[in-house]
Length: 182
Image (cartoon, rainbow, N blue to C red; front, side, top):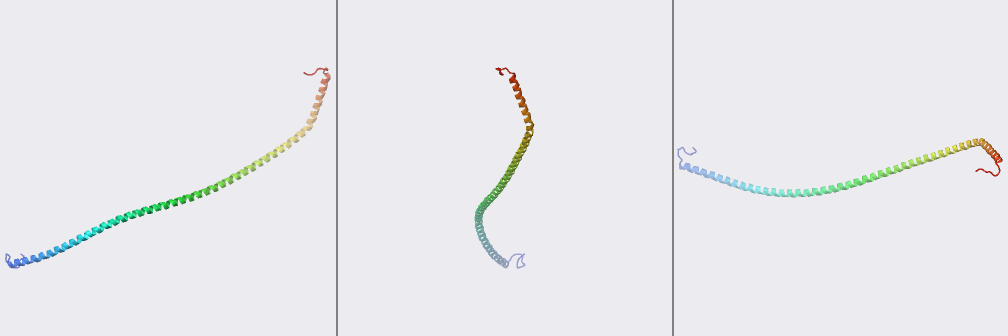
């Protein structure tokens, strides 16, 4: 029953005691409420401070992000320029190397053409010499054969000429004077 005495109703002493107890409880609750208010105010201030810090950090983060973006863009541009320069240098080196190879090949080709031309000219000269020698040999053979045949032909030719002269003499003896061939 929660009374200090055993009476079925509340006595003044019990009421006083209950009142006192309620006042103590109220005071305790007031102190607790004040502590809670202080804690809420402290936490609200702390939350507000944290919110401000968060906003500042977000702003700094955005600024840093933008700065890093610009820095990355600058580094990327620098890298592209370096790569372009490397590419140009490598291209120039390869072109120079290619030109050197072409020059070597051209020189080799010219040497080969000269060698072939020399061989061809040598072969032509040899063929001309062989031809000249063959013609000379054939001419000598022909001359010897003509000389070998010239002896009997000369005698035959002399006999023919002599017989021709004889026929003419006979004809002129048989031809009347004053008649001539038409």
